Amino acid sequence: MVRRFFAFVLVFICALSSAHADVLFEGYSKVLAGDAQIGYIVSRYEFDNKKKQFLSTYFLKTGKGASEITESVKAVADSELAPISYEYTSLAGKEIKTIDARFKNGTMTANVKQGGKIQKIEKKIPKGTFLSTFLVYLMLKSKEGLKSETKYEYSAIAEEDAAIYKGEALVGKEETFNGFKVFKILNTFKDTKFLSYVNEQGQVLGTNALAQGIETKLVGSPEEATKDQPYSANILKTLFGNIPAGLGNVVAESEKSKRDQLKAPPASKEVGVPQGQGIIIKAQPDKTEGKGN
Image (cartoon, rainbow, N blue to C red; front, side, top):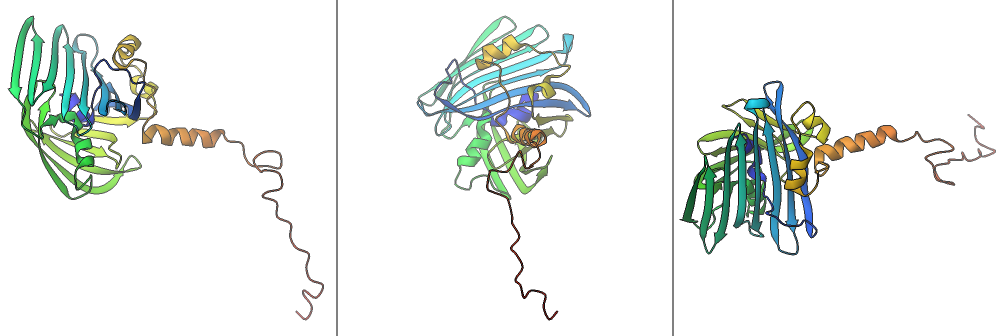
């Protein structure tokens, strides 16, 4: 369920090359329980200009040893955010669950594998229903856009169980979160309430699952998110096609700008001032200047 607290904005590509896709967001987040880090999240948003599809990839890891949990989602939606497909995988201890869902002509067909059993789900999808991970993009594309003092009621598919639920998102006033301007959004979905801090580009800078005490925080580098945490480069390469650099977000951009400023040499006669510029020559005083004073 930690995925639900962060990833309601994520859309994922299913076995597609990103050669024609523009990266809209890419970042690493810490997962926190109180002051202790218990895991991390890696996510990437893309838009495939050739196919006119929203894409994203998501990976979550929490816990260690026998308590380790991983979740991943791959999904794709069309330019209007109508679902096309998604794949969900979770591993908790030795328990594996996978969902492979496809959407066609208003119908979802999904194969669910869990505990050695296979269940096939087929159900009609009401018009306007979307994958819950698309919520913020849907809000951005709405007539009102993402703005304060706004309520969004919706019907979405929970990727972890291929079921449809009603939801509500309340956008509060713009405020500051970790030094960045954001909208605080109170989302209610599957009878669970959580806060998300989202900037005007739809980037999630943090979340707070109110009842569970689980938070996420977007950080500026992979190292900060994965330090002292179980980590597999091979899993990320398989899921994302490469190891995400995590630089496509405002937090990483801000930290890079600060580092560049610290590295920049101070302006001097030798460095930092183009020839013939920045030199001020004081005009000679008029011969009568100062007379009579």
